[in-house]
Every structure is written in C-alpha cells, then in structure tokens.
Amino acid sequence: MEYGLFLAKAVTFVVVVAIIVGIVSNLGQRQRKGDKGHIEVLPLNEFSEQMHEAVKEAVLDEHQQKAERKKQKQEEKEKQKQQKKAAASKKDSDTDSEDKEEQRKRVFVLNFDGDIQASAVSQLRQCITAVLAEASDKDEVVVKLQSPGGAVHSYGLAASQLDRIRKKSIPLTICVDQVAASGGYMMACVGDRILSAPFAMIGSIGVIGQLPNFNKLLKKHDVEFEQHTAGDFKRTLTMLGENTDEDRQKFRQDLEEIHQQFKAYVAERRPSLDIEQVATGEVWLGSRAQELGLVDDVLTSDEYLTGQMTDADLFEVSFVQKKNIQEKLGLAAEQGVERGLLRWWQKLSGNRFYS
Image 1 (cartoon, rainbow, N blue to C red):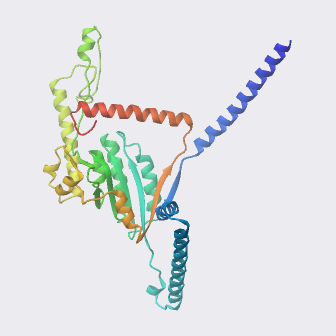
Image 2: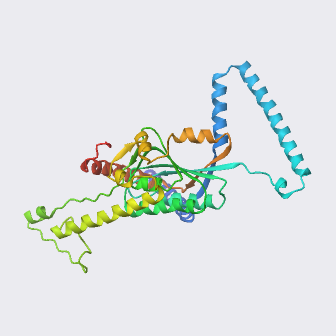
Image 3: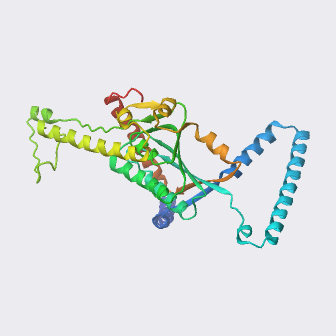
C-alpha cells in the first residue's frame, strides 16, 4: 500500500510537470511564430572606446589611471565649451544655410557570411531595408562580405539587394577579409569600392555544374528507370537515366550562357576590367587581384573601419531572429553537412585552393 501510494504520487508529479512543460512549450512556439525577428544596432565608436578603456585599466597603474581620468575630464570640458560656442553661433545666425547644423557622416556596417544557397540574404535584405530608411548620400554603407559562391539564382538575388543601395546613390564599400569567389564576387562587384585583405581569395568568375550518374549501376542490378518530359530540354543531364551527347551539349550550352551573363554583369559594374582575362574561373590573392583590377585597395575591414571612426559615427546593423534549441541544433547539423559537401565538391572539381 505504501509503495502504491508513492507510485501514485510520482505519476501525479510527472503528469503535472509534463502539463506545465507542454503549456510553456506551446506559449514559446506561439511567441516564436509571432516573432518575425528584429533589427539590432551596435554603435561601433562607443564599443571601440569601451575596449580601449578596458585595456587602459589593465595596463596602467593607479597613478597613471588618475592622470588619464583627469585628462579625459579636461577634454570633455573643452568639448562642451566648443559645443556651447557652436550653439551660440548658430543662434545668432540669420541665414538658412548658417541655421543648418552639418550632420556628421554615418557609416552603416552590414555582415554577409555566404553559404552555397546564400541563405544569409534573408537577413541582408532586412538590414538593407532598415538602413535605406535612414541613410542619405552623405553616409556610407560597408558590407563585410565572405562567400565562396554557390547557386546562381541565390547569389543573383543577393547581388540585387546590394544594387538597392547603389540605386539610392549611397556610397557602398565591400570589404573582403577571406574570400569572395564566384557568386561572392558577383556581390562584391556591385560596390563602389572593393577592399581586400592581402591573402583573401578573389575571382572565380566562372560557372560549374556536375552530378554523378548511376545508370550503369542500375542496369547492372536490373533496375529500370523511367522519366517522361514534355519539352525537348525539360531535363538534360540526369543522375539515374542514360545521358546522351545531345543532353551534354545542351547542358554545356546552358553553362556557357550563364557564364556570359555573369561576365556582362561584372563588366558593367567594373568597366575598367579586362573581363576576358579575369573571367577564366581562376582565383587570385588580394595583392594580385588589385593588379588585375578586381579590387581597388588591399586593406582589411578592421583597418578601414578604424580609420573611419575619427570623422564618422559607425553603426553595425544586424537582423536577429530567435531560435529554439531544436532549430539551433538543426542549423548546426545542416551547416556541418553543407561544409562537408562543399569540401567534397571543391576537391572533386580539382580546386587546390580549398581543403
């Protein structure tokens, strides 16, 4: 009887906990469905100052810290005096031109870390929409771009998103610290300026298409494969059916047509390029890419942005969407598989620059 009573209590406790967990989980799912994501803005000038202060506190002794704080107070007082003088001069001004206070330049920093499907374009488009609502032609947009390329249609859309900035006459700078190849370079060439780290990989203006064919294996095991299409070229090469010379010719023709459009897109945005020289599918390091005209300067994004902080206010803009544990684990697994497939694809295609 005592055991039965204990068992009943234990079952009751488990059921109650399960009900509570179910309610919380259901509320969480409803909240996630309603959460379309939000924009986060990080003032990089303030963030940089905080880091500098942390380093100073670590390396300076107490006497030096007091002297530094005293110096900062004096600088702050001097800054306030200058602001009061500027406000007074503005008050005494009679003309409209003098009445307008010149706005300090703003630099909006966006990040794009591309995969094969350019899935980050969904966040990029939200960030660009938010920035375009505020930025003017006096400001600047900097995109820190990293991508080895991928699907043509996906990167075409990503490049079109950057074109929205150009159409608003807002200066656009692309910073490449590691790689901007194939579809990644398609995006980069939209910028007014392209900055590359010395050993970043640039180029790969080419198109590749490949797939295995298991038709002989199926025949060996007496497996028949049927495929019916309406239209001569609804399907060219196939993984399971028997490919013909006509199929292969059409497939290569499609690749060549995409390549020609890719070349035209790059040439239109960087007219000084010798497009026939660089559109060979090759990849160059940053310094050589500058010689060929693929990039404008050899400089890391950190160098460029740090140099801007003196005369401009920098804001890093990102689009954040909350994910539950299952989504995070699924995304991590998906990215792991994708990286493995990408490495396999690069090795299979004979590209020695990636491991």
